[in-house]
Image (tube, rainbow, N blue to C red; front, side, top):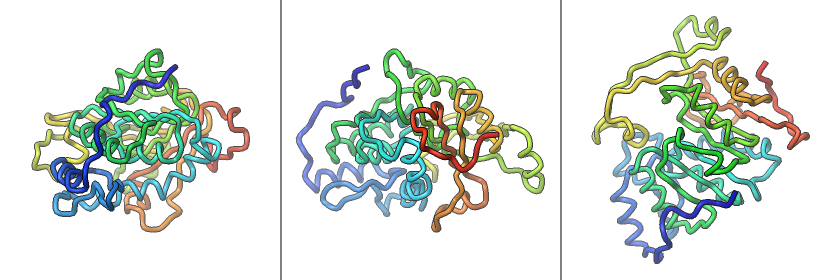
Length: 285
């Protein structure tokens, strides 16, 4: 499977003032990405919430070492798929880490416009962004990926089971899932004995929303499902992954939701034989 062609043609490099103006026009961005000239996609005056400043670095500190370990210690020569890539921060990080090809997809055109601006600025030729629904992913067209990043999307899905089966069809080995978890006061520990999903109807948003950097795709009311930890591991098993670890928050300075169990990251390996030296701390069973 050949790498897909870049979704935007090469352009002349922007000057510092041109790049800064373009970033400010498209701000706020959900990921703080370092750009040339000492610039960043994080624009304090346009920011809606502090998470835009911390989100990317938090998850890299928390999960990236385990992701690299699951991939054999390096992304060199590997194909990476970033589902719901938003403005492309984790796609850029994977491309800079030596992946041979990174495809970032998102359903919202504004996020893809942001991501393509970043791609143009950082000049990474192994990186591609496309506006695409994850259900439109097709192994015969897009190929297989050694690593799939599935950050901040599982709990937004109307059909998480069908969606994970589609992702599994493209994931040849490693899937990294970062998701909000269902949390019910007082009885949450009891409910964690069984795989469960909490259905919520969430309101549509407009351009004034404080969480616009993640909710722009939802202009109308939407039904979504938040899993508990057992539901995540059970669904990953059902989708074909055999070694599953829920990462413990071992570093300091993460968002509180990682420490209180409201948010969690899972690493799932489909073909342990590809990297026999990898040892996961927690199995799914």
